Length: 593
Image (cartoon, rainbow, N blue to C red; front, side):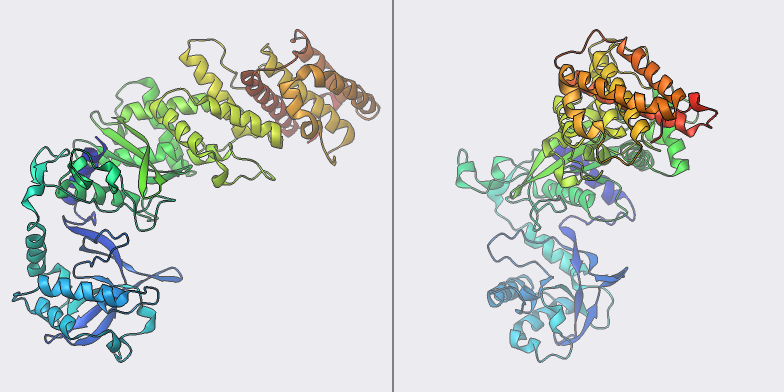
């Protein structure tokens, strides 16, 4: 299913003008120089193909014959390669002489009998070239070592690998394979030459730089019923090229590539299929907007409009083209695994269904007052599950399995992983950082669980002073006690009760809250001398909140600890909100932060 969808996407890319996708047998690679040969095969110049990118000079991306899949062996690319193969010189390779010999012999055999002037010039160059000539040539410099090179005939603009004669030679060479490898392709259903090895897939974070594979049978243990390597999963060379080319296109590291994103250790790509390219591209753009909400006001308004359309479940005149009926979206999550790639998740469904699920996700996440200006992207939510040091978290500290499970839950519309709530509670108890995003994630887990089990126990979106859930009420009470401390002692505290007691208060309330209440009486006594009106208000709020409790429980379950964080956030933000209002007298002043 995955390979078939990628192969179909390759067909769409090839048919799209200006897509930059390579034709069958070719691949986009980084090329730095072109060796210019005269008709006799003499090197007369070297073209620098590199391009300026900011302050850096980078190789040019160019479509060249598909590279060989190299592991430990010596395998020469056709009509291009790095200097150790093309010229027999290298700054790093210790076997440059053998690599050049392989390149020379392979090309002399490939070009034997050709009547194309450019290809004859290349054959003459390779027959006469010796690695010692590198230092003698006025056109070659040490900075060129180990760069990729192509060839051009002097007086012509095109490169040798683009010449029709070169294409014919390459096609004839590819079709001269072993006839015994003809078989039924699992992707296309046609009898075609089967691929023994599949092209490498590059661009997955953490995978080998030389590339990795989804389909690979490279050990004797994988031999089954006499079938070795690619015969275990028969896929034609044509389909293998198609799906790997499409996937490498999706994985390309390009600032303009909006179909690739990183979720934890998983590199995620997505693409759409629709009645035409316009609707497919609109769906891809829309999904990028949904999964990574923008800061731009216009785009944010468009996103709100799309989610409103989905919630209303009706085709409005201003229906977003990305939601056109019949449009399907495919989402693939890949993670590194030695020389192979692990499929973290594979989801494919109608685009409307994905939009509905993301709308549900934002509804479950909704918390007031909102701790963000625009809906947070998935990567920002994942950072909340990592340890917080001075209010900052690092992406490498995000639990990798949790990242994949959370992405799957959002995109598939299933329950959030239980481990998400466990990790959040553990982090807040450890670093005492009860951020708005962490509280919102706790609320999302509990709200979705309540909705999926048809329960009326969903946490409130905003402050609910009538809510009697013990965890929520205790969180509110803890915030009120902290407010009393801050109001009495000022902001310049070495540590508040949150820094000292949050973990214990949220887990074992009966052992902590009596102590906190006794300390609060001292704080209120001091506050009555300076701000009697504020003291009355705080004491009243504390009393009304305690009245909602049926005693202090010995311990709180993990779900109640999540509600504790939500209640703490709501009560604390209510204090900040009132502080922002114009002060009238002491009775309106409920504390300073």
